[in-house]
Image (cartoon, rainbow, N blue to C red; front, side, top):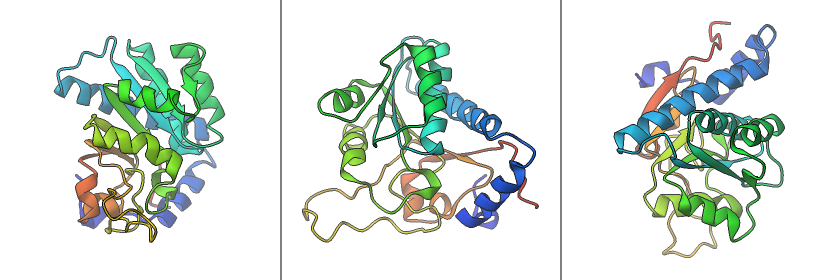
Length: 229
């Protein structure tokens, strides 16, 4: 259970990951994380009465390992019968994640954010995996990512967030403030997830309100990171 007693900070989890990766390859840890995300996505789909076979899934992937976890989860779902596509919401994407998803779902499964294909992929989905920023993210979302994830939130699509909902700061219980030049009627730029799969231990934004209200149900997945040091 995610409680305030077992919160870890970003610095603590980064240090624990570095210690663990002296003995465990990073790819192994990412594959474990991806499996937990894929299982959560399949479970959420089942809760909504959506069969996994033929389920339309869109992965929104950022440039780092969070995006890689999401892409690898998409590959696992594709191998289980889902129809998975992804949109890279920045200029680069995790190379192994892209390769594995395209091997499982077919060439062209990963596109860029350019209008209209990227946005159409999100709105055509029955379930979205948010893998844009993770624990390294800053409050709020840049235009390209929000053009995708904001549409998913507004459309009420089921969303599984990887580690933390994009747009939240992992070490803060606060919601992001609007940009100074933002339209006063525009919604704040953060993902509101149905399920958040976080790794090793909960982060403050997933436990303490108001940020925790954006996390949905929090699943803490053990991927083999040793916090004890």
